Image (cartoon, rainbow, N blue to C red; front, top):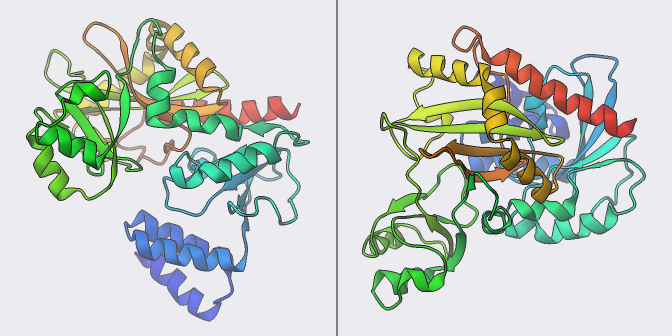
Length: 373
């Protein structure tokens, strides 16, 4: 990429420019060079831990302090994508578990915890919950509620909601799966689960090592290829429509109100928007456009379930990936505040998207302004 080459050349001239190193780190992570990107990020954070992203529209109407942690692009809330053309200044403060918020705090109108839930971040979130308990400015996404997005906790938190389906997600060890694979232990003994199942290593994102298995014997080959010690397993729900295709929706919940972000259509059950063929298939894009245009009806149909999700998660901003089962239930795959929401798709291919993404951005801005008021 020409921009990356330019930044590399500039970094050689200005080796103490932390902003330049951080931008270069982001570029490398976007290109899939994770180890290199994290190494460059560490170099930037060794110079400074506070970075400012001024609003595109000046003068800015709001200053949002974002509490972040070192890591790849899935580690923190990517608000720069959502607010790229807004009048909101973003101030990124990268904290450490040992010493959260030890540097002088920049002036701000509200603070948002952007750190995602993970085992590595548990101590950081616990420390932040104490620090922010009496914070003088409004707090968005309180740290003590972020663990609710853990797949296992979420699956239990959302049980018993009318019109909502989420299979129990169990945390199992490698040894437990090996016992199932060899017939020494039935899968059902670990909880409310049966084959077929989906299995993934704890901490995996974007479908990494996510597989659908139909029988105990298939675990043997799976474990031979995946070396992690701990896994999430859940019962597989066939959410295909009558035409045999699968449809997955991303919805943003902002201050309790739902907004359409995107819809992906695929012949495979494991859907990611970038590999679902949405860029190549006009018919799929037309279907997405119809869903987004009729989102109010979708939201009304699942209104009680969506409202209850918000009440139980207790987060001000988060997204859910979901589907509709053939009998009309809302099937939840995951919910968290670190999903990517953006309006960067080409207008020529997605002329319908920008008006809907503008609604998401405007709703987030309105939530900020209402909190400071």
